[in-house]
Length: 241
Image 1 (cartoon, helix red, strand yellow):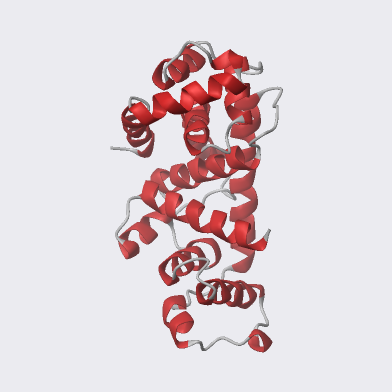
Image 2 (cartoon, helix red, strand yellow; image 1 turned 90 degrees about the horizontal axis):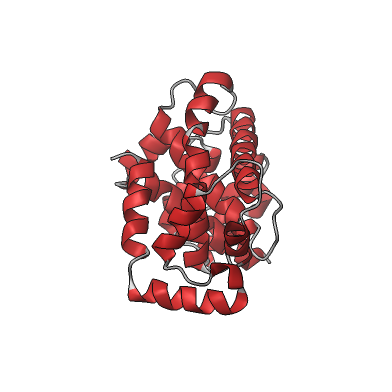
C-alpha cells in the first residue's frame, strides 16, 4: 500500500469516530462554513468541488482551525489530490529535489511531511488559495531542504550513543553538522526529544539517509518516518519558542 492509500485509509478510520464528530461540532461554532457535515462528508465535499486557484470557504476555515490536530489532518486530506502529482514531477524535472538513488516512496513521504509542516505553520491564517498555497509551500520546502542536504553531505554520526555518553561539547562544534548534533544532544538531555528521535532527525535531515533506509534502520514505514520527524521537529520548535 502506498502512502497516499495509507493516508486515505487512516482518514476513513479517524473521520468516523465519535471524537471526530465532537470536534466538528466545536468547529462549527467558530466557523459556520463547516456546519451540517460530518468530518468525512466535509472532506469529500471539498475534494469534489476543488478548482485549482480558488478559495473553498470550507478549506479556508479548516486551515484557520489547523492548530487542532484533527482539523490539520482534514486539511492534509483535502490537499492530497494536489500533492499526488508532485513526487513524480519532482523526480522528472528537479533532480535537486530528489537524488536519483531515491525512489518515489521516499520523495512522496518527504513531500507529505513538508505539507503537514506547511499546514501547521499556517494554522490561524486565512489563505486566498489554500490548496495551491500549501502544495507549493510543501514543494518549495522539499526543494530547500534537499539543496541544503546536498551542500552538507555530512557523515552519519551515532548520535544515540554520544547523547547517552555525554561526549559532545559545544566548544568542539565546528561545522554546521556538528552544531546540529550539539543542539540535538542538548535536546535529549533536556528530555525535549528522545535519543531515538534525535538520532532519526540527524541521520535523515543532516546525514541525508533516504526515507527508505531510515525505515529499514528504525523499523518504520516511510509514512511513519515522516510522522516521527514531524513530531520531533514540532517538539524542538516549541522548546525553542
